[in-house]
Amino acid sequence: MALEDICNLRNSCLHQNWLPASPATSFLMTDCYNLGLKGPKKSQRNNEVPLQFFIPPLLNSTSFLNRSPSSYFQGNPPVTVRRPFPLSHGTTTLGFVFQGGVIAAADTRASAGGLVACPEVEKINPIHSHLVVTSSGSGADCMLWERILTREIRLYQLRHKRCLSISGTAKLLSFMLHPFKGTDVCVALTLCGWDKELIYVCSDGARLQGNIFSVGSGSPYAYGVLDRELSWSLSNEEAISLAREAVFRATHRDAYSGNNVDLFHITAQGWHQRKRENLKEEYYRDMKKRAKKVEERKRMANELDTHN
Image (tube, rainbow, N blue to C red):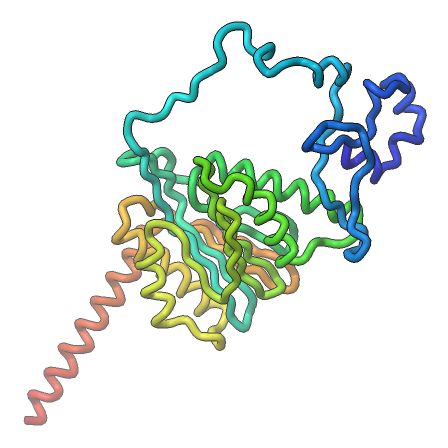
């Protein structure tokens, strides 16, 4: 297993007590492609980074390997049943870079067609102290791949005594997702890290880097707000207010987004999560702003009338 080499388990008495020393029950790592017992292949140029992913061997693996695929099922093999209608889903997630760090924001509504499946979903999840990811797509797929990514980053840290860079993390995720290209896997993750990098990775293995990303059905509306007001020189409060307003505008027009807004601010000290805000509060703030603008216009119009 991966932790076996890190913890030097094979040389301890626990290994001998748990499993007898036989090839069929060895704790040696196995190649995930052919399940043949062998050591891990490592890169000679990149600090001996593992070039393959491994899975632990099974007890009595020799008999397991010799079984035919049809023997796993007592009757007929299971048939994949497709849904009678497409189940659409949507979301609004965004991230951008400014002089004070990186901002990640998302709504909290999980939708399944015309149904609001859950109003309080966490669509921004920390991977380590200086990296969070925003997720959009199928909820189950996103949760699974976030856990896989967290595991691999932690194992890399244990092996090499340092965290993998944001670009390296995106490349690793892209390589893991690429074999699922063309399948029903639906994952779109935006990596927001303190390297002041934003990298978008989707389930076909595509990897894009930029300073601003918005993903989901509400992203066109969020882009409209961000393109108009985003600048490098924003203060922390201005950047947070801008992200909150962009999510609010998207949820106002997109039926698949809504309920609350989650905000993360990533700096050199790590990520900081702001308190979840209900979008109704942003709506009332927006109504007050509009009322003030109307009053200001009326006041200016009255002043012009008096001068004339």
